[in-house]
Length: 225
Image (cartoon, rainbow, N blue to C red; front, side):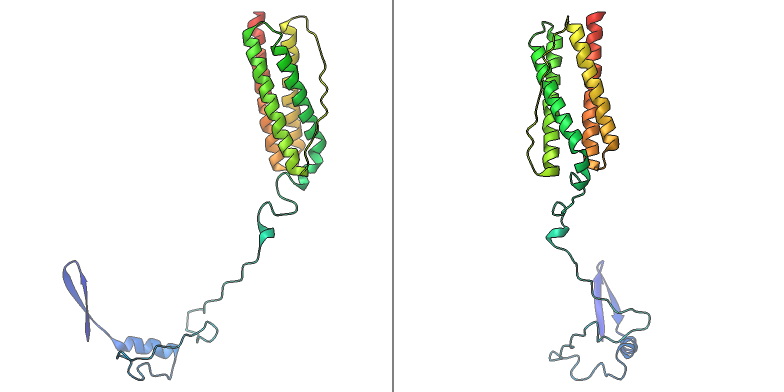
């Protein structure tokens, strides 16, 4: 009996060698006639399924092992943990620092916004307004971080000191020191924080504060020289 496999327009004939199948069968089920009954007819009985436990061993072949049942449920999902990896238990030690930054940013925002309305220099007014907006955005990020840690909203107590400066240069000098010290304090808080997400937040806000200090310094140089 021959079987023809077509390929590339040419027929390739291959004769079945049943001796090879007989040898394999004897290794799998010795003593069982592989051609019992009408094995080549249409009424041939389908072989019964063999489970992994009852299948005979074949030399050099390991029986398939059932896949282990996957454990888990809702408690294994990120965010469903009692102590999540970010903004969780590890971050609670930084709550006092976090609240201090919130109050400082909001107070600085109000101070810069009030000062921007009193200066006549348009470049200084624009910079002060932008600084006020960034400080307000920083306070919002910090409030969101505190809520993620505690699950409670925070009502900061803001005290704005009403100060008077002799001139715009003195006001910008005060603003520079505020931003430069803010950047330093954020960096120090990031180094001391244990929570990785809180570290990233402090580092990001510290970089922004340091950048603003540089911008104030540049504007101050333009006014003085």
